[in-house]
Length: 274
Image (cartoon, rainbow, N blue to C red; front, top):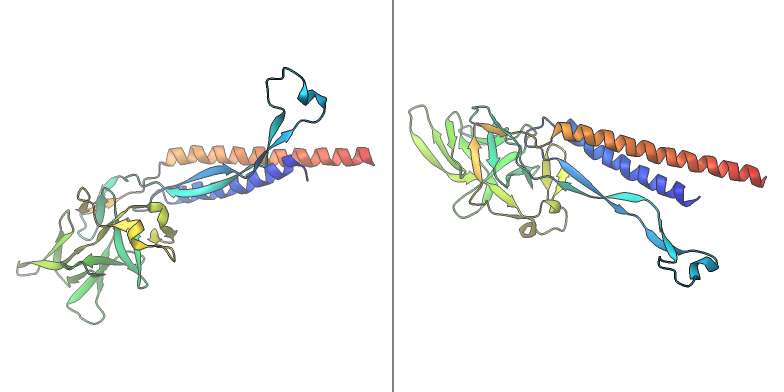
């Protein structure tokens, strides 16, 4: 198999993966709190091949005696675009949005997770009918922290109105108009290294096995604010992603044409030898 066929095959594989990243961004252009993904490419292997013959050793030669030989490029890292999405007013007291960096800490099947999706709703407690939890549409429970810094699913009184200020302090108002400050605040963690989290289904991010929690996330930044009655839209630029989709498709077509041309050249060579 010649070098052009190897390069084309490697390129097609990487471009197909890039196509999946772009398609995922387009599919989630309207997903609440979705953060777009970006892919980078890198050389698979390059080498300098010496030119044969005495011409490479002519006196007075200025250019190098060799030429670069490559074997295509592959998709490298897939990073998360952490830019702020557009704020959308809903006036729903259980809808929350984060203004600034950070993510809502949630409990996903008993494991710690994070999300920017703030479309919460009340879930009644199975053990205490006077209490309820706040959960995402996927069922992830919103976490809260008490004064000692202990994390646990955020508990709120059932059948009351809640008010959440910009720092996550929760107040409930009952039918008699009595206001109570709850012992837990909404837990928003500052993501120090987004690349240290693994993106799961349902706009959820988890800590990989073996990773250190303190190396990836920290406490809520002083400049970060929680906005009640708002939702953060996706930060995907649909027009830019459509343009990128066209570029990726053309690159794939070019690589496929290279592969086809190389195959035809090999067929011609084999027929001449015969």
